[in-house]
Image (cartoon, rainbow, N blue to C red; front, top):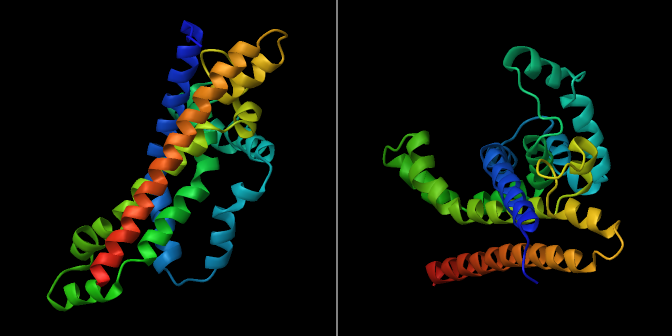
Length: 232
């Protein structure tokens, strides 16, 4: 079960893609979670449905839509290429974008639940004592919802580690560039006599995902215990 240099490269690329995906997504996911938790505006139900769409759409469809939008002829891809000389096609950055889109719903949901659990009476008390909305957010709302932010980060990382369909559709399966754990397992399955490779990569994938889920559940239990102690 010793890992080869190629295996280590796959693991390194998978961690790189997953971490980049959740770091990029985190501020946008928090903003969406805040809007859905506290906002009252027309179209809120439609926004909620759009945010959770990657959970129900086939990942291949998400990859195809990304290809249309960020490809060389796509509206966003053409602008990026013309203005910044940047392209995410067939690059690890494209794999990170695909993973970010697929992880977004889980991250928004975790942070939304955490924001909704913040006692509004504490915020109201702070405002009556003269705290501005910005200071109230930074000193009360954000710290109290921080466990949800951490949970969202962990869940997003776990989801990104297992991403396959959108990635292979959008940026293909290129060793050393876009071939993450899931894609490497798929490639190994196509080669006769590669059972050992499949086992190694699958066990790594299971270990990373399981570790992230255990950490997320432990954090959730700690958060619930803290709330119970606070109530008592």
